[in-house]
Length: 207
Image (cartoon, rainbow, N blue to C red; front, side):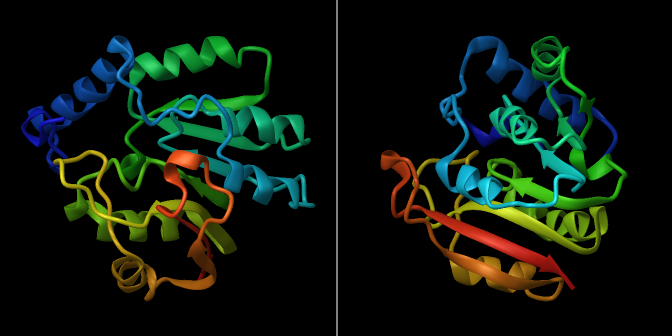
């Protein structure tokens, strides 16, 4: 993917349209190599041990949202999905028409709400690194007091231009450290085979 095809400018002009069109095109053309077609095993293991079924949960940049379907099967009903691709969101609305899952077509940086748990899987690596500080602040803003941001981050950089964009644990510690306490932050032991050794599992508590 060529970064020239996509812009993450904060302006309200053509840059935003370019960003939306980029992700719509990925779904329309089936260029979804990041899609595991299942719940990521580290996320599944975390969901399995959650006890409070009343948690309000946000999956930001939700993709095909296998996590939402799985969470609902466990008894969670306060689930919100946000994604910037209209093509994807229309597909999800058809897929989940029988489930009480909120599905919103929106740039996550424009989203407003309050949640007990935010699930991160592939949004952070999809945004331009120049927006990472803004991402951290937005996640902090969207969480209730005592809320948690959890999920997966890449544990390496990539030779090809992104997205996806990688990074290091040290970089992430600097980014998130002023806003969150780190409850877990370590290499996954249960990643899918192609990503083994290249994913960090984290649980960050809103400070």
